[in-house]
Length: 418
Image 1 (cartoon, rainbow, N blue to C red):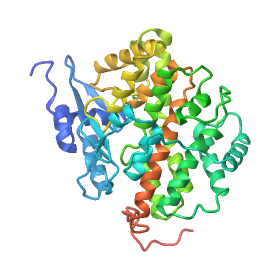
Image 2: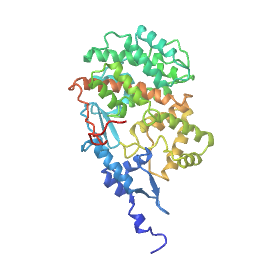
Image 3: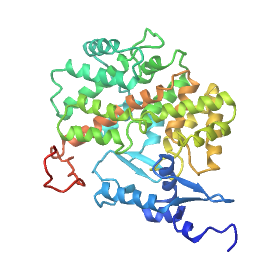
Image 4: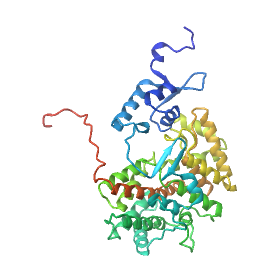
């Protein structure tokens, strides 16, 4: 046996990317997405560009996917829920059958939200908060400690606005849509302003900008922010959206459903991912080279934020659309170059493409916004999608989102504990 050939007993424990993909029932690109999310570990082939995977680890993930899907054939093994809102297909996604990136390019966030809610376009749609709701929400948010995270502020604002609305338990479509059009601008208005502007009206993106950046917002930057909001309105059944549907299935009112989504969004594997990408981007800008920064991340056993997405074998279409707009903003060029360096450097290890978190990081870092800004943008944008899913769920059988537990504990009867 040649020295460079693996021993048979070791070779049996490792799978190629193709073999792992076949065992999991996914595309090879999805296998690397599992790696990027920390669900699988990989080992580089000595002297080659490929990776190998532990057989037992892959089999365990395959079993877990099948168990969580209840035997269904959804993408990656997840349970399926009927929806008319968002379709994700290869490297594109659609809102009610219309290309979402084209909608976001041609329409404002408010108009895209209206389309998702009703299937009708309302040109010039704007959302206006009531003075009463803003007063209550701001008072509640202002009472929080200074270090409070943006998602916590938004959740408190949603709860405060709910208490001020005696009609919140009306779950008719007209009432819920009325709530949505008031709640979203209330959430923005409740955030402490970074830059004071005498104009409180206008597009939601302008109002949100003053809560995120102390810089003057030029037209190109506002367009990028508005487009980011529109791109992020919905993305099928992400973890927070599924939680919203569970709440709506129990007939929780719209404020409570949104609060549920905000709670899940705060997880580091969901909404907080953009903040991690923001910090990584700043480190690369500071060092002037992605290689040492990526090396430190890999050495620490951390996945590289802003790369890979389980639903897209290629580049995230949201990232592609947002990068195109950012290229028109001169001050975004250093951050864009740093992002490209991150993608190119990581590609030597795994063929992962940029996702929307990295594009958001370029927007926030180049606009003088804090690392938490991406999470705020994500939360405000996705509130519209949560409302859309809540509306769908209100039209379904109550409490249908109630899976049965698969008990794996000690079999009864067991003796009483001493």
